[in-house]
Image (cartoon, rainbow, N blue to C red; front, top):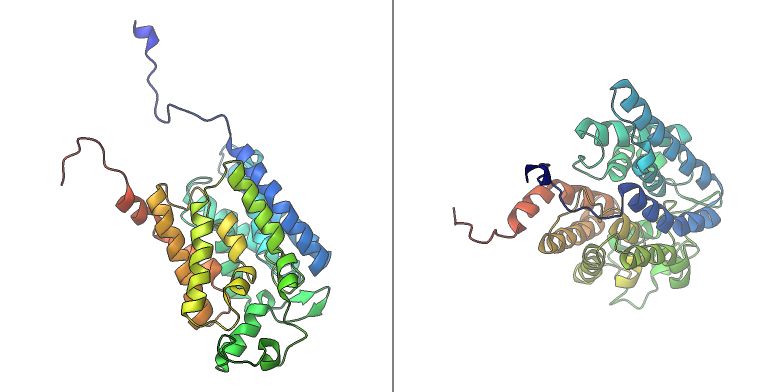
Length: 326
């Protein structure tokens, strides 16, 4: 009888899907956005993507080799981190900066905390934040096929500072900003023909990838839908100068909502916690966009909410049947 009992630590029930397969599915879902970014922003985008992925994979392999750990680069987590970092960078960024960002993501944000599954914030977004702090000019220089242009959110920021509101003013937004040639149409914003980071410009590609991940069960609908809905509603409440549809299509909202806020390690475990987390992300992103010094707030909103995930999990943890109140 004793031979039938196997003592082991949890988890005792395992799913057939592995970390490698999950990462592969996410990478697959991101390919359309990368293809659109390369088409509209130029082929240099491919160099930035390649450098970020190589830097992340090499950093993880070298670190684990030097610390005599088991090599885990085959699980594709470092590859995905490099891809997401590249998607959060402008195509004109110097390649050596992109490489430094990749090293920072893996060594300082991931490996210093124990490796895959142990990091307290999203590595790719932390890398982007570090690069933005260290080299703000390079990180905010936008080009479309080699031609410099401001991002739509930057234009909106200027219009907002001038006190013009499209909801109440008959003056068209582009004319009011004096940059009609740079402000994209709704169709251009949907397909990705506008300035921005490599992987954030094409809404249709990001939506296709996000819906794919929901359909195959890799992510839940709660975080992306509530995040996006909150940002859209808050844009109206804060009187943003372009309207909720543009607010959703512009910047990194779709990329962040579907592919980074849903990170298993840095998002809440419970459904109620995911709702709180997503609402917080949408609120903070909208506050930064409306009142902050930067036109974009998606990265910082996710990073800030990453840090309070343990508190959210603790507050929303289901009660054990029969547990006595403390």
